[in-house]
Length: 331
Image (cartoon, rainbow, N blue to C red; front, top):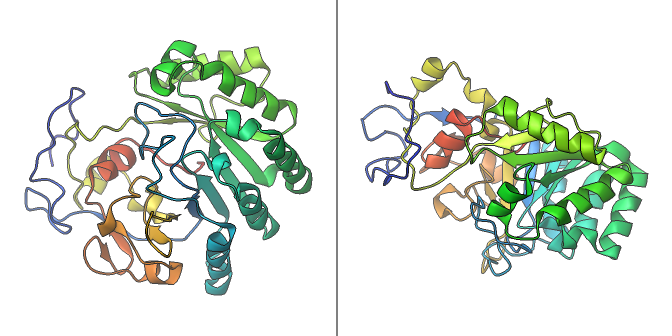
């Protein structure tokens, strides 16, 4: 693998790539990532969302229910398993869709917080979060658990025009209003942006910083956990496969990958039980299922896994994580 760059223009993905779990199209050994520790367990609350974004990582929308609402009972089984297996998990992350559309969301958050976990919620901070019942519940949770509850709000750009190019008209001011409410009530907040416009990181952070200052939000734009700027993904863009040699070429350790420290739980429509996955970006790919329990996921073998280790056999592994440096977890 001599050329680690990839085209910015849209080109067809090489059909020979990402086919064999063990070997790349060039016949080189495919890289894999072992789970070092389960630091974060992600729970997908369902793919239904109040808006449709142009480049949503998992195609959430007001009509996409391919991942159905996970229940508090579903989630408790995994919290129990973390304790039973003594996994030492630090954080439970909730993502969607829009988590605040899930009828059980407040119970889901309280169950995790009550067991001592840090809790991270990914939200667009719009109408679902701003309903009176949800606001009252959030205030109660903040009062009880303080800074162990973090809400990370998707603000794709610091300008209305580019944010709404992704999220649709009339979304910018509504999101700002949601963050204003969170900031005004003492919640711990982070912001998630996108790098789709090819803006240099320093320029983007300066732009966000000016917005934060103007709104009076106590968010440090230079802190990569407080302001996360995600790499863009597009399945139409050709990316290189990641081989075992790439770690040395890139100067990156496999331990730095998201799947070295996290797993995700989803509940697919029509399936009786939730499924454990290695990654938040692959909710629909059946071949990446690791079983219905955390114990099964730790020993998943065959296909895309080897003794629980993940074989990086998907374009997202290359573009988002290895080359893009993306991670859904705070730094």
